[in-house]
Image (cartoon, rainbow, N blue to C red; front, side, top):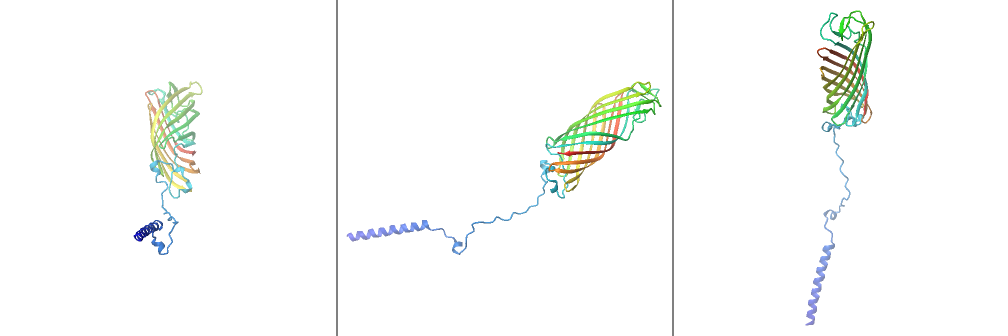
Length: 328
């Protein structure tokens, strides 16, 4: 009987040992790897694939976000014709010389007197030369927003001559007969300020719409050198000028840019009406990234006529001009 119990106990111990061995084998055995079983080594370090080279046009997004081409290195422009233009926070400034031809006529009293017409010509009556006038001005623009800028310019003019009357006229109640020696002087100070809006801006072109306030201070003094008292004509005028300006890149060469500029506008208000037109070539030379010096030359025309019942003052100026300056 006792031996029978020992046999049962021995069988139970064997079963426990067998289950324990199977459990230990399952917990300690590694998963089967067919590559390892076949004799291959697993790859632990993988070399990344060679990046694919893409050709990207560098300035394509500028037209959308209105960025500035001048922020890029000009030497990397290659064959693309890129137009440097002021970005937000940049200035464009420089002096300007105007080789002008000046024509004009004035009337201080209405009607015609016994001494001749009341309209006096600047050349035939007052003796002002039409050619050979050198005028200077200063011009500055500040781009305070991506599309908005402010502009200011100042231009003085002085003409002083002693001559002889070629055509009799009446001016300001005084009569001047032909052959009378007279002294004539004309002073004009022009202040011009306004805003500029970039209507369309791309890599190689720029179109602006501008609205300016034009303030003119005219003083014309006509007097005889012998017995006739001088007569003065003084008038300050405030006008509005609206117009459009177009800029187009023509050629890039090693970072230098040749551009075409054209603009036209109309002046009105204060009993005045006039217009302006300008065409020029601009050559920009990079100084460093975002900075350029430029040389601009072309032809411009400006005509203005002020007419009232008892007075009239009409002038026109045209000729070549030359400007140097900086974009910074």
